[in-house]
Image 1 (cartoon, helix red, strand yellow):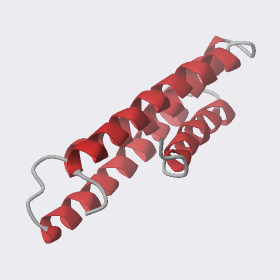
Image 2: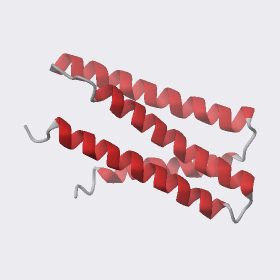
Image 3: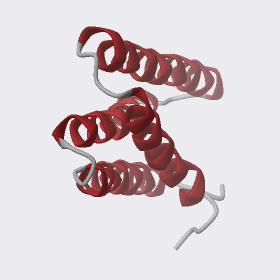
Image 4: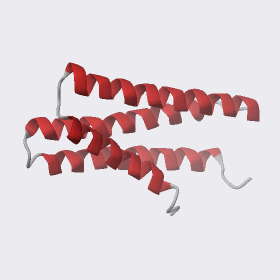
Length: 121
């Protein structure tokens, strides 16, 4: 086995914490454009972090076999995208925050997720 569950949990926690850090940073960067843009960017990035945390919690909660692991992974990914899309709907249509900032925050936080597996260290 190349990777243990404990290692996977540590990587997942590191990714979520890095995504929350990116949410803070992108919010601070967009603060120069105004408070609504800063909130929108931070909220977009936070949706990705919440989705990743939910997916990780679902996947790493008591996996016993390969079939169960696959089922938990698929439901975790589905829950992650429900959180992200639902959060964007709330940000854009209910709160009417700026869309460019929200999508930029989402992309920045998702880049952390993609780059985390590129640099294992």
